[in-house]
Image (cartoon, rainbow, N blue to C red; front, side):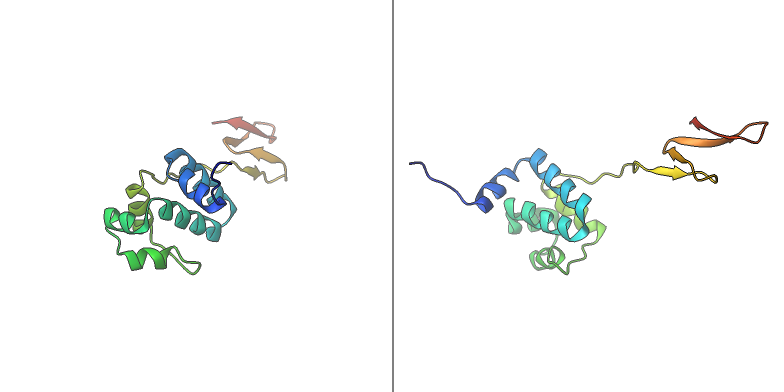
Length: 125
């Protein structure tokens, strides 16, 4: 019978792949800040904490503290740590629905236009 590995070992091995790590971090970010920090800690451990600390210019103790449950890493720490692992942060527009003055839902990316007869119509930008 072949050797089996623990879930944690398999997870850490998978998280060395940048695409897997990015998907894992994004899932954590969509869930909650504590989930994101836990995910970031796992990805950092997959890349070896000491090595990431050295390559990011963040002291190892600071890195551990930033990624703890009570952690609150700065944007500089996040970008440095992600960069050391071949990752980066992005900002994108949230998919949202805007409610018009009349209470009607208008998809994001459309704007309200007043016509001559005072009716409000959603028009694409």
